[in-house]
Image (tube, rainbow, N blue to C red; front, side):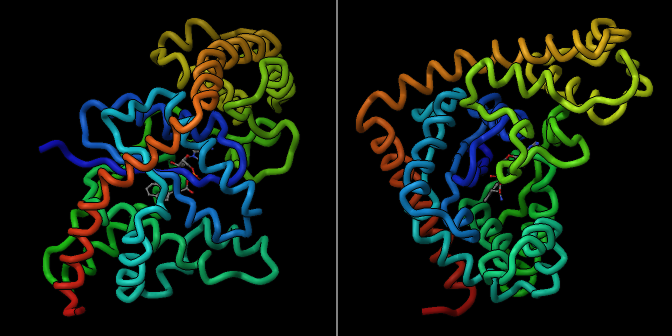
Length: 326
Ligand code: TYM
Protein backbone atom coordinates (compact mmCIF):
# COMPACT_ATOMS: atom_id res chain seq x y z
CA UNK A 1 0.00 0.00 0.00
CA UNK A 2 1.28 3.48 -0.86
CA UNK A 3 2.09 5.89 1.96
CA UNK A 4 -0.60 8.50 2.34
CA UNK A 5 0.21 12.18 1.77
CA UNK A 6 -2.00 14.98 3.04
CA UNK A 7 -1.62 18.72 2.57
CA UNK A 8 -3.81 21.78 2.19
CA UNK A 9 -4.08 25.50 1.61
CA UNK A 10 -6.34 28.11 3.08
CA UNK A 11 -8.84 29.77 0.74
CA UNK A 12 -7.98 33.22 2.04
CA UNK A 13 -6.19 35.83 -0.08
CA UNK A 14 -4.56 35.12 -3.43
CA UNK A 15 -2.26 32.12 -3.83
CA UNK A 16 1.24 33.32 -4.67
CA UNK A 17 4.50 31.90 -5.95
CA UNK A 18 5.55 31.12 -2.36
CA UNK A 19 2.57 28.77 -2.01
CA UNK A 20 3.41 27.25 -5.37
CA UNK A 21 7.15 26.77 -4.85
CA UNK A 22 6.87 25.86 -1.16
CA UNK A 23 4.08 23.31 -1.54
CA UNK A 24 1.98 22.94 -4.69
CA UNK A 25 4.88 22.25 -7.06
CA UNK A 26 6.01 19.43 -4.77
CA UNK A 27 2.52 17.96 -4.62
CA UNK A 28 2.44 17.69 -8.39
CA UNK A 29 5.86 16.05 -8.43
CA UNK A 30 5.07 13.35 -5.86
CA UNK A 31 1.42 12.63 -6.64
CA UNK A 32 2.10 9.43 -8.58
CA UNK A 33 4.33 7.95 -5.87
CA UNK A 34 1.89 8.29 -2.97
CA UNK A 35 -1.78 8.09 -2.12
CA UNK A 36 -2.45 11.85 -1.98
CA UNK A 37 -5.21 13.97 -0.52
CA UNK A 38 -5.09 17.70 -1.28
CA UNK A 39 -7.50 19.74 0.77
CA UNK A 40 -8.92 23.26 0.66
CA UNK A 41 -8.98 24.11 4.33
CA UNK A 42 -11.96 26.43 4.60
CA UNK A 43 -12.47 25.78 8.33
CA UNK A 44 -8.99 27.17 8.89
CA UNK A 45 -9.74 30.24 6.78
CA UNK A 46 -12.65 31.25 9.04
CA UNK A 47 -10.37 31.56 12.07
CA UNK A 48 -10.17 35.11 10.69
CA UNK A 49 -13.41 36.72 9.38
CA UNK A 50 -14.08 35.98 5.68
CA UNK A 51 -16.84 37.57 3.64
CA UNK A 52 -19.07 34.51 2.94
CA UNK A 53 -19.61 35.10 -0.78
CA UNK A 54 -15.91 35.72 -1.35
CA UNK A 55 -14.97 32.63 0.64
CA UNK A 56 -17.31 30.44 -1.43
CA UNK A 57 -15.71 31.74 -4.65
CA UNK A 58 -12.21 31.38 -3.21
CA UNK A 59 -12.73 27.70 -2.40
CA UNK A 60 -13.45 27.00 -6.07
CA UNK A 61 -10.55 29.20 -7.17
CA UNK A 62 -8.10 27.21 -5.04
CA UNK A 63 -9.47 23.92 -6.37
CA UNK A 64 -9.02 25.21 -9.93
CA UNK A 65 -5.46 26.31 -9.11
CA UNK A 66 -4.60 22.83 -7.80
CA UNK A 67 -5.82 21.41 -11.11
CA UNK A 68 -4.09 24.08 -13.19
CA UNK A 69 -0.81 23.31 -11.40
CA UNK A 70 -1.14 19.71 -12.57
CA UNK A 71 -2.82 17.80 -9.76
CA UNK A 72 -4.59 14.92 -11.50
CA UNK A 73 -8.00 14.34 -9.87
CA UNK A 74 -8.06 10.77 -11.17
CA UNK A 75 -4.96 10.05 -9.11
CA UNK A 76 -5.26 12.38 -6.09
CA UNK A 77 -8.33 13.31 -4.09
CA UNK A 78 -9.08 17.04 -4.06
CA UNK A 79 -11.56 17.92 -1.34
CA UNK A 80 -12.94 20.72 0.82
CA UNK A 81 -12.31 20.36 4.54
CA UNK A 82 -15.80 21.37 5.70
CA UNK A 83 -17.41 18.77 3.42
CA UNK A 84 -16.07 15.96 5.64
CA UNK A 85 -17.44 16.55 9.15
CA UNK A 86 -14.90 14.18 10.70
CA UNK A 87 -12.21 16.93 10.55
CA UNK A 88 -14.06 18.96 13.16
CA UNK A 89 -15.04 15.88 15.15
CA UNK A 90 -11.48 14.59 15.47
CA UNK A 91 -10.23 18.11 16.21
CA UNK A 92 -12.35 18.14 19.38
CA UNK A 93 -10.97 14.81 20.56
CA UNK A 94 -7.41 16.01 19.94
CA UNK A 95 -8.11 19.33 21.66
CA UNK A 96 -8.76 17.35 24.82
CA UNK A 97 -5.21 15.91 24.84
CA UNK A 98 -3.45 19.17 23.89
CA UNK A 99 -2.01 21.41 26.62
CA UNK A 100 -2.87 25.05 25.99
CA UNK A 101 0.79 25.99 26.56
CA UNK A 102 1.76 24.07 23.41
CA UNK A 103 -0.67 26.20 21.40
CA UNK A 104 0.35 29.52 22.94
CA UNK A 105 3.93 28.87 21.86
CA UNK A 106 3.08 28.67 18.14
CA UNK A 107 4.77 31.55 16.29
CA UNK A 108 1.94 31.90 13.74
CA UNK A 109 -0.59 32.18 16.55
CA UNK A 110 1.50 34.83 18.26
CA UNK A 111 1.92 36.81 15.03
CA UNK A 112 -1.76 36.60 14.05
CA UNK A 113 -3.02 37.27 17.58
CA UNK A 114 -0.84 40.39 17.81
CA UNK A 115 -2.75 41.84 14.82
CA UNK A 116 -6.24 41.28 16.35
CA UNK A 117 -8.00 43.36 18.96
CA UNK A 118 -9.91 40.35 20.20
CA UNK A 119 -8.44 36.91 19.59
CA UNK A 120 -10.94 34.22 18.57
CA UNK A 121 -10.57 30.80 20.16
CA UNK A 122 -10.32 29.33 16.65
CA UNK A 123 -6.99 31.06 16.14
CA UNK A 124 -5.54 29.25 19.16
CA UNK A 125 -7.14 25.94 18.13
CA UNK A 126 -5.94 26.31 14.53
CA UNK A 127 -2.99 23.86 14.81
CA UNK A 128 -5.16 21.22 16.52
CA UNK A 129 -7.53 21.30 13.55
CA UNK A 130 -4.48 20.99 11.31
CA UNK A 131 -3.32 17.97 13.32
CA UNK A 132 -6.82 16.49 12.90
CA UNK A 133 -6.64 17.00 9.10
CA UNK A 134 -3.44 14.99 8.93
CA UNK A 135 -4.08 12.31 11.57
CA UNK A 136 -7.59 11.67 10.25
CA UNK A 137 -6.10 10.12 7.13
CA UNK A 138 -3.14 8.45 8.86
CA UNK A 139 -0.86 10.47 6.57
CA UNK A 140 2.81 9.52 6.67
CA UNK A 141 4.12 12.53 4.75
CA UNK A 142 3.01 16.17 4.76
CA UNK A 143 4.59 18.35 2.04
CA UNK A 144 4.52 22.00 3.15
CA UNK A 145 6.60 25.18 3.18
CA UNK A 146 8.89 25.95 6.08
CA UNK A 147 6.39 28.16 7.91
CA UNK A 148 4.28 25.07 8.66
CA UNK A 149 7.15 23.05 10.15
CA UNK A 150 6.31 24.11 13.71
CA UNK A 151 2.67 23.08 13.24
CA UNK A 152 3.87 19.73 11.97
CA UNK A 153 6.05 19.24 15.05
CA UNK A 154 2.98 19.95 17.16
CA UNK A 155 0.99 17.43 15.12
CA UNK A 156 3.62 14.81 15.88
CA UNK A 157 3.54 15.71 19.59
CA UNK A 158 -0.26 15.45 19.69
CA UNK A 159 -0.19 12.09 17.88
CA UNK A 160 2.46 10.72 20.22
CA UNK A 161 0.66 11.98 23.30
CA UNK A 162 -2.60 10.40 22.17
CA UNK A 163 -0.88 7.12 21.30
CA UNK A 164 0.79 7.04 24.75
CA UNK A 165 -2.44 7.82 26.59
CA UNK A 166 -4.82 5.59 24.66
CA UNK A 167 -2.67 3.11 22.73
CA UNK A 168 -1.37 3.11 19.13
CA UNK A 169 -3.97 4.98 17.09
CA UNK A 170 -2.29 7.49 14.79
CA UNK A 171 0.55 7.37 12.29
CA UNK A 172 3.14 9.98 13.36
CA UNK A 173 3.70 12.02 10.17
CA UNK A 174 6.94 13.31 8.63
CA UNK A 175 7.33 16.83 7.27
CA UNK A 176 8.55 17.18 3.70
CA UNK A 177 10.09 20.53 2.71
CA UNK A 178 11.38 21.39 -0.78
CA UNK A 179 15.17 21.80 -1.02
CA UNK A 180 14.78 25.19 -2.71
CA UNK A 181 11.79 27.51 -2.22
CA UNK A 182 10.72 26.35 1.26
CA UNK A 183 10.58 29.98 2.37
CA UNK A 184 10.03 32.59 -0.33
CA UNK A 185 10.33 36.10 1.05
CA UNK A 186 8.33 39.24 0.27
CA UNK A 187 9.64 41.05 -2.81
CA UNK A 188 9.15 44.45 -1.17
CA UNK A 189 10.73 43.30 2.10
CA UNK A 190 12.96 40.21 1.99
CA UNK A 191 12.95 40.00 5.79
CA UNK A 192 9.25 39.07 5.76
CA UNK A 193 7.85 35.78 4.46
CA UNK A 194 5.78 36.21 1.27
CA UNK A 195 2.25 36.09 2.60
CA UNK A 196 -1.30 36.07 1.23
CA UNK A 197 -2.40 38.61 3.79
CA UNK A 198 0.37 41.21 3.37
CA UNK A 199 -0.93 44.53 2.07
CA UNK A 200 1.99 45.92 0.00
CA UNK A 201 1.14 46.33 -3.72
CA UNK A 202 4.53 44.88 -4.74
CA UNK A 203 4.87 42.29 -1.98
CA UNK A 204 3.95 39.09 -3.82
CA UNK A 205 3.46 37.61 -7.28
CA UNK A 206 0.02 36.01 -7.27
CA UNK A 207 -0.45 32.93 -9.44
CA UNK A 208 -3.13 34.71 -11.44
CA UNK A 209 -1.29 38.03 -11.88
CA UNK A 210 -1.08 39.19 -15.53
CA UNK A 211 2.44 39.23 -17.08
CA UNK A 212 2.90 43.03 -16.94
CA UNK A 213 2.09 43.07 -13.25
CA UNK A 214 4.48 40.18 -12.59
CA UNK A 215 7.25 42.06 -14.40
CA UNK A 216 6.55 45.27 -12.48
CA UNK A 217 6.58 43.54 -9.09
CA UNK A 218 9.84 41.73 -9.77
CA UNK A 219 11.58 44.74 -11.34
CA UNK A 220 10.76 46.71 -8.16
CA UNK A 221 12.03 43.99 -5.82
CA UNK A 222 14.21 45.19 -2.96
CA UNK A 223 17.86 44.17 -3.38
CA UNK A 224 20.81 45.90 -1.70
CA UNK A 225 23.45 48.54 -2.38
CA UNK A 226 25.74 46.29 -4.47
CA UNK A 227 25.52 46.61 -8.28
CA UNK A 228 25.75 42.96 -9.22
CA UNK A 229 25.37 39.40 -7.97
CA UNK A 230 28.05 37.99 -5.72
CA UNK A 231 26.88 34.51 -4.75
CA UNK A 232 29.14 34.51 -1.66
CA UNK A 233 27.92 37.73 -0.08
CA UNK A 234 24.45 38.30 -1.57
CA UNK A 235 21.89 39.87 0.76
CA UNK A 236 18.40 38.44 1.44
CA UNK A 237 16.68 40.27 -1.44
CA UNK A 238 19.06 38.91 -4.07
CA UNK A 239 19.07 35.44 -2.49
CA UNK A 240 15.28 35.46 -2.65
CA UNK A 241 15.26 36.32 -6.38
CA UNK A 242 17.82 33.58 -7.02
CA UNK A 243 15.76 31.08 -5.00
CA UNK A 244 12.65 31.93 -7.02
CA UNK A 245 14.53 31.37 -10.28
CA UNK A 246 16.13 28.13 -9.10
CA UNK A 247 12.92 26.71 -7.63
CA UNK A 248 11.07 27.35 -10.91
CA UNK A 249 13.72 25.98 -13.26
CA UNK A 250 15.31 23.27 -11.11
CA UNK A 251 18.94 24.19 -11.83
CA UNK A 252 21.75 22.94 -9.60
CA UNK A 253 23.74 25.35 -7.40
CA UNK A 254 26.65 25.13 -9.88
CA UNK A 255 24.45 26.04 -12.82
CA UNK A 256 23.06 28.97 -10.85
CA UNK A 257 26.53 30.21 -9.96
CA UNK A 258 27.95 29.99 -13.44
CA UNK A 259 24.91 31.75 -14.91
CA UNK A 260 24.35 34.53 -12.36
CA UNK A 261 27.72 35.29 -10.74
CA UNK A 262 28.61 38.92 -11.55
CA UNK A 263 25.29 39.67 -13.31
CA UNK A 264 23.96 43.19 -12.78
CA UNK A 265 20.83 43.38 -10.63
CA UNK A 266 18.76 44.88 -13.46
CA UNK A 267 19.51 41.87 -15.65
CA UNK A 268 18.95 39.41 -12.80
CA UNK A 269 15.48 40.88 -12.24
CA UNK A 270 14.65 40.75 -15.96
CA UNK A 271 15.62 37.09 -16.10
CA UNK A 272 13.67 36.21 -12.97
CA UNK A 273 10.63 38.08 -14.30
CA UNK A 274 10.75 36.27 -17.66
CA UNK A 275 11.18 32.91 -15.94
CA UNK A 276 8.13 33.51 -13.72
CA UNK A 277 6.02 34.84 -16.61
CA UNK A 278 6.90 31.89 -18.84
CA UNK A 279 6.09 29.37 -16.08
CA UNK A 280 2.82 30.99 -15.08
CA UNK A 281 1.45 31.58 -18.59
CA UNK A 282 0.52 27.95 -19.37
CA UNK A 283 -0.70 27.59 -15.81
CA UNK A 284 -3.06 30.54 -16.24
CA UNK A 285 -4.30 29.20 -19.56
CA UNK A 286 -5.21 25.89 -17.93
CA UNK A 287 -6.91 27.77 -15.11
CA UNK A 288 -9.04 29.64 -17.67
CA UNK A 289 -10.12 26.38 -19.30
CA UNK A 290 -10.98 24.72 -15.98
CA UNK A 291 -13.21 27.54 -14.73
CA UNK A 292 -14.99 27.76 -18.08
CA UNK A 293 -16.42 24.23 -17.74
CA UNK A 294 -19.56 24.50 -15.62
CA UNK A 295 -20.00 21.72 -13.11
CA UNK A 296 -16.51 20.29 -13.59
CA UNK A 297 -15.04 21.57 -10.33
CA UNK A 298 -18.05 20.66 -8.23
CA UNK A 299 -17.95 17.11 -9.57
CA UNK A 300 -14.26 16.80 -8.67
CA UNK A 301 -14.81 18.14 -5.15
CA UNK A 302 -17.80 15.84 -4.58
CA UNK A 303 -15.81 12.86 -5.82
CA UNK A 304 -12.81 13.82 -3.64
CA UNK A 305 -14.95 14.03 -0.49
CA UNK A 306 -16.66 10.72 -1.27
CA UNK A 307 -13.29 8.99 -1.77
CA UNK A 308 -11.77 10.16 1.51
CA UNK A 309 -14.84 9.94 3.76
CA UNK A 310 -14.55 6.18 4.52
CA UNK A 311 -10.94 6.63 5.71
CA UNK A 312 -11.96 9.57 7.89
CA UNK A 313 -14.92 7.67 9.34
CA UNK A 314 -12.75 4.69 10.20
CA UNK A 315 -10.25 6.89 12.08
CA UNK A 316 -13.04 8.58 14.02
CA UNK A 317 -14.51 5.18 14.89
CA UNK A 318 -11.12 3.94 16.11
CA UNK A 319 -10.42 7.13 18.08
CA UNK A 320 -13.81 7.00 19.78
CA UNK A 321 -13.29 3.36 20.64
CA UNK A 322 -9.84 4.09 22.09
CA UNK A 323 -11.21 6.96 24.18
CA UNK A 324 -14.23 5.02 25.42
CA UNK A 325 -16.72 7.29 23.68
CA UNK A 326 -20.12 6.00 22.64
P1 TYM B 1 -1.22 28.33 3.84
O1 TYM B 1 -2.54 28.38 3.16
O2 TYM B 1 -0.77 29.53 4.59
O3 TYM B 1 -0.09 27.99 2.81
C1 TYM B 1 -0.20 26.91 1.92
C2 TYM B 1 1.17 26.28 1.70
O4 TYM B 1 2.08 27.24 1.18
C3 TYM B 1 3.26 27.27 1.96
N1 TYM B 1 3.78 28.65 2.00
C4 TYM B 1 4.99 29.01 1.61
N2 TYM B 1 6.04 28.31 1.13
C5 TYM B 1 7.17 28.99 0.81
N3 TYM B 1 7.29 30.34 0.94
C6 TYM B 1 6.27 31.08 1.43
N4 TYM B 1 6.40 32.39 1.55
C7 TYM B 1 5.07 30.42 1.78
N5 TYM B 1 3.88 30.85 2.27
C8 TYM B 1 3.11 29.75 2.40
C9 TYM B 1 2.82 26.81 3.33
O5 TYM B 1 3.90 26.34 4.10
C10 TYM B 1 1.80 25.76 3.00
O6 TYM B 1 2.43 24.53 2.75
N6 TYM B 1 -1.98 25.74 8.02
C11 TYM B 1 -1.77 25.61 6.60
C12 TYM B 1 -2.89 24.89 5.88
C13 TYM B 1 -3.23 23.54 6.44
C14 TYM B 1 -2.46 22.36 6.25
C15 TYM B 1 -3.19 21.33 6.90
C16 TYM B 1 -1.27 22.09 5.59
C17 TYM B 1 -4.32 23.21 7.16
N7 TYM B 1 -4.30 21.87 7.45
C18 TYM B 1 -2.71 20.02 6.93
C19 TYM B 1 -0.80 20.77 5.63
C20 TYM B 1 -1.52 19.76 6.29
C21 TYM B 1 -1.67 27.00 6.00
O7 TYM B 1 -2.14 27.96 6.54
O8 TYM B 1 -1.14 27.04 4.77
